[in-house]
Each structure stands twice: as structure tokens, then as C-alpha cells.
Image (cartoon, rainbow, N blue to C red):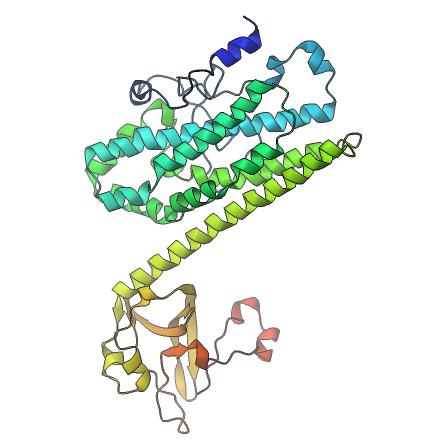
Length: 416
């Protein structure tokens, strides 16, 4: 059996899914690697140090390998003859290096998702330490996310098996960055920041939950990483796609001799489109996470909202918004500002810019007070409303702000 045949013979069982016994046993054996998942979004270009790699072993990896530790990248040069290798230009070798990294890191990412699904999700579900909605916060669609990337991984390795020297890859990549990946990734990532905060706080006060996670984290497949270090793997993967595609495009464009070939031009066009689609997916997921965070903020503020003073007012605006529910609105931005009035002290306020209105809140401890403010002007006896509807709001640039520092330019001027 040739080396190439031996390599692919380990890739023919038809299932990247790890054997359950393999995943859930051998918790203390095996050595750990020095590589780790980065939680700050820094990405490595080396497969051996990739943020996508959870496991690192001595054996070579295939997408269908039974061992979860088989994640060392198989050098693509081992799959071709010496003569074929000599006939490749330096540019083509560089291109194959990038493709090999793309394939390998996808395989590693599938293993990360497998660890989340089979080690953490199943163990927490079995232990019943979390309510269904809490478990869903941590792993909203983990099985779907795993299946999506498993299919991507299989397609990549199909291309590798088809020809170790991968030719055009544009069509494959265009098929990968599709609506299914976009929607699944958005669902999985949108509440992840809340999930990470939940895990931290829950571990501090729930010893049983902490013990379950500690037991999982001792398994060699986790490489001593906590759940919080593995959970962001999907967002990290989405961030890395554009970087890898950019390098792949550069490896093609740098070959001036072949770039004028029509087939190369077509391939480049597809690669550029694939990179654009990968960025669109990343932006879509980031926006979904922002919207989820804003929804959560409105829920938190609503829980601590005191409208008693506002409700007692006879002002028309108070009657219109007497039973205001902030969760029914969409938050654009929030932040602290200062309310300045003639002959009145400056009052720090918390501003909510919603799609439909501007809400001015006064903070007292954990409470957010919705109340009217005295105008401070004898010419304006009516109090200042804490709710300003967008259709009554006049926005204009303040010339004074242009001369002030960046820290002082955030100003909301209200004229009654």
C-alpha cells in the first residue's frame, strides 16, 4: 500500500463523529499541547498553533479518524510523488500550503464542536444541573452547528482525496459560505457573551455545576481548557475564514505567469466572491450578537425601571406611555450623559436611544427612574419630558462640539 493510499484508507469510515467511548473515557491519559484557543480573537497562521485546534497528537489526522487526538496536519507533500513536487512552482507550493491549512483547521474546528457537543453538552444535560433554557443559552443549536461544519469538512477532504494537489477551489468555497452556515452561526453565537458571563457567575455559586465542568475539563480532549475557552470556537472560526481566503487569493495573484490564464481569472473571481461572502457572514453574526446584547440590556433595565413618579403625572406623554415596556423596543445605543438646565445643577442621566424615541433615565443605585425634570427656566414652566418621540425630535450639528475634545462631543441638546 502506498503512502497516499494508507492516508486515505484512514478517511473512509464515512463519519467524522467521534466514538462515544473514545470521547468520554481516558480522562487522565495523554499529554497536553502548548497551543490553545485564543479568547481575544488573535489568530495564528500555523496549523500547529491554530486557535481552531483543541487536540494535538503524533498521529496524522483524517476527517473520519476514530481518535479525537489525531489532529496533526498531514503534510500535503507526503501525498504526491517527488517528481510531481519538483514540477510545482514556488507559488503553487505556497497555494497548496494555504489550502492545506484551510482544510486542517476546518478538521480541528469540527473536533472542537465535537468536544462541546459530546463532552460538555451531553454531560451537563445528563447531570441536570441546568434548566432547559439555561442549557439552551450555552448550546442553542450545537448539534446543527456540528453537522454544518462536519459537512464542510467532508467536502474539503473529498477534494483532497480527489487530487492531493487541489486545483480550483472557488466553487467549493462558494458552496460553503451559504445561508445555512450564516443562520446557524448567528443562532449559536448571538448570545455567547451572555453565556460566558452566566458560566462564570454560576460556577462561583453552584458547586455541583462547577464540579461537572471540572470533570469535563480534565479530559485530555479539552487540553485543560475551561469551557469558557472552547465555547468561542465558532466565532473564532468565522473570523479566520477571511484571513485564510485573503492569503489564498494572494498566492494566486502573486503568480504573474499564470494569473493571465482565463481559468485562473475565473478562479480568482470566485475566490474574491467567496471572501466577500465570508465577511458578510461574519458581519451578520456580529450584528446578531449586538442585537441580542441590546435586547438583554433592555430586559435588565426594564426589571429595575421605576415609573411611579412618571405615572402620577397628568402630562399627555405620561398618559401615552403609562405602561411602557422597554423590551418592546429596539435599542440603538445607550450611555451616560449630563443634563444641563438654566439655573439648575448638572444632573447625570442615562440615555437610551431607541428606534422610536429617546428615553432619559435617572439612576439611583440599581434603579432606573423615569421621571420629569424641572426646566429651570421661568419662560418654560412645564417640566421636561423624559421621553422624546423621534417624530418630534430635531437633530442638528452643534458647532461648539467641533472645537471640543472627542470625550466632550457626545452631547444631546434639548430645546423645549
